[in-house]
Structure formats: structure tokens, C-alpha cells
Amino acid sequence: MVIADFNFLLQTMAWPLVLLLAWFLGERFHERWHIPRVTSYVGVGLLGGLVNLPGLTGDVPGLPFLANVALSLVLFELGYRINLRWFRNNPWVLLLGVVESFVTFALIYWVSGWFDLQVDLRLIIAALSVSASPAGIVRVANELRSAGQVTERVLHLCAINCMMSVLLLKLVVGYWYLSTSGDLVLAAFGSIHVVATSVAVGALLGVAVPWLLRQRGTHERGVTVVFSLAVLLLTTTAYGLKLSPLLAALTFGIVARERRVHLTNAQRDFGTAGDLLSVFLFVYIASLLDWADVGTGMLIGLLLIAVRTVAKVGCNLAAARLSGISERKGLLTGLALTPMSAFAILLLEQTRLYGFAPAVQVLSVMAGMMLLQELLGPVVTQRALMAAQETHVTKE
Image (cartoon, rainbow, N blue to C red; front, side, top):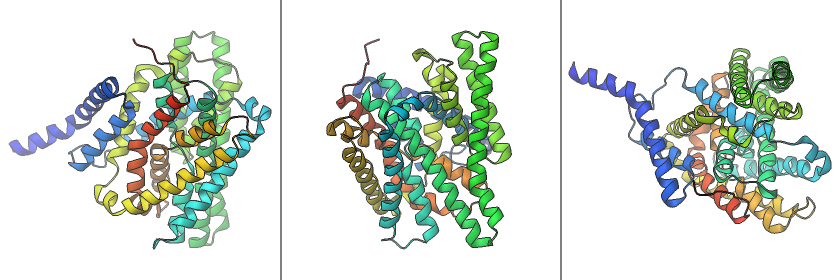
């Protein structure tokens, strides 16, 4: 009886204790060794999964939704930093993002064929590998107060990569439904409909919320609260309609930026609530990885990371002069796009919840790649932005 009570107490305390530990180590390691905070959060989540901490690694209801809310806030902020007029003035950046996405997809699909994997799994792995991690990149950029050519280019390419990854994955899902059921209507519903409706819902909210704010004359702090609640509403709606909350949130941010409602630098990361959700997001993502899968999938993970890095760095180097930057900045831009796991894992989990059977096997195949990308990716982004001399961190 006493043991049962203790296990129940441990389960109820697991998440608060782990989040507190992750925050403490994140601050400590960042202050002493300048390690990105998100890397420490991931490390704590991995350790929690390794020891199979009760209450942390189980299937707890509501956690996937909360993680999607946390990532949707980041995606809204990423979208809010996208300047569509820049694409009109420099179309090479937009073209680079699209071409680089297809090159990454093709190379990863080709290399994954060296292993004994089904075509469906290879297509999913290739689609996910196109994405970059907005959570890792945006948090590191904000932490460094980074601004400049490389930073802006990385953020814009990250947004393009995420959109292309969602589109490619939805096409793969549609192909899978078509090949398994032969139902063309179901296949279209599972791909084109989801993408188009998610974008439409995000755009609608992006028009409506700024209009309401202008009618009310809300102060800066109130703007942050309203946008946070709007993202929560958007995520809930997307879950209810089986849409993509990640794509909808990114679209919401892009359209809201075009409506000229401004967030100040102090409101980035959505304040204290955003910081707390960020800690939870990275710990949760890391806790989803199975260490047995990590061990067996490390070889393919290392190879996929190398190919993905070559694709992104190579494309950015090749297009550097055409798009208006030096080769050195092109190299740093490609390296800064290294993180990918948070967005990819939640996109995969969301697809699994919507009934896409192969998604379960893909996470086990990509576990080694996910671990290394999320643990070390933010460090690569941090060093790349520092090498670009675009950071503006001062002693507090």
C-alpha cells in the first residue's frame, strides 16, 4: 500500500520536478558554458526517458495538445517575423527555400534506399527531413538577440522549410491512402484539403484579430495576451477539424504581420508563459524518444544528418552570390538550419493521431537522427549566428 502510494505521488510530481530541473540546468549551463538553454531542456527530457520516470514517459492525456500549443506559439512568432515584401524584392531567397527543400527531399529519399525500408517510410523520412526546427532556431536567435542578414535569412528559410515539409508529408499521406484504399476522394481529403483549410483558417484569424485590436486600441501587453489566446483558439480548432495547427499558426503569424500590428522585442517568446511552455516542449519532445530505437537507428541517423547538412549547406553556398550574400554567410545560413526534431516529431505525432499507420514506425527509424539533431542542433545554430557576428547579448 505504501509503495503504491509512493508511485502515485512520484507520477503526480514527475512533470513539475523535471521541468524545474530542466529550467535550473538550462540557466546554469547557459551562464557557465554558454550552452543554449533548449539543449539542456532536451538533455533532461532524454534522461527522464532513459530512467523511464513514472508519469513522464507514459501516455498522459492532454500532453500532445499542450506541446502543439507551445510549438504553435513559436510558429506564430516565426511567421510574424516573415516579411513577404522581402521575397518580392529578392525572389532568389524564396526560390532557394523551395529548391533546397526539394533537393533535401530527393537526397534523403535516395540515401534511405540503401537500407531495408519500405517506400512509404522513405517518403515520410524525406518529407520530415526537409523541415527545420522553428522552436530551436527562434529560441536561440532570441536568446542571442540576433539580428542581421544571416539571422533573417535563416528565419525565412526555416518558415519555407516547415511549409514545404507539411505539404510534402500531406502529399505522402494522400499517396498512402490512395495506394491502400484506392479512394481518390479520401486521398485528396487527407492532403490537399488539410493544407488548404489550415492555411485558410490561419489567414482568417490573421485578418480578424488585428482588426479587433485596432477597434479596441489595446496596449502592447494586451496585444501579447490576445495573440496567445488566439493561438490557443487556433490550435483547439485545428484539433477539432483534424487540420494542421502548426501550418495554421505559421500562416496566422505571417498574415498578422502584414496587417501591421506590432510586437515589441520585449514580447518575444510570449513572456513567462512562453518560457514555461518552451521548457515543457523540449522536455516532452525528448521524452518521446525510445532509447532502444536510438541505439539501433544511430547509423542511419548519422548518415541522414550528413546528407541533410550537405543539401542545406550546398544549396545555400551555391545560391549565396545570386541571393545577395557572401559564400561565408551562405555557409553559416545552411549550418544554422541544422535543428529539426521538435517540429518533425510533433508533425509526425499529429499525423499518427489522425490515423496514419506508418507514422509509428518512422519515429523508431529516425530516433537516432532526432536525438542528435535536437541535442546538438541548437549549439550549431548558436555558433553559426555568433560566427556571423549578428548577436547582441549584453551583461544583465
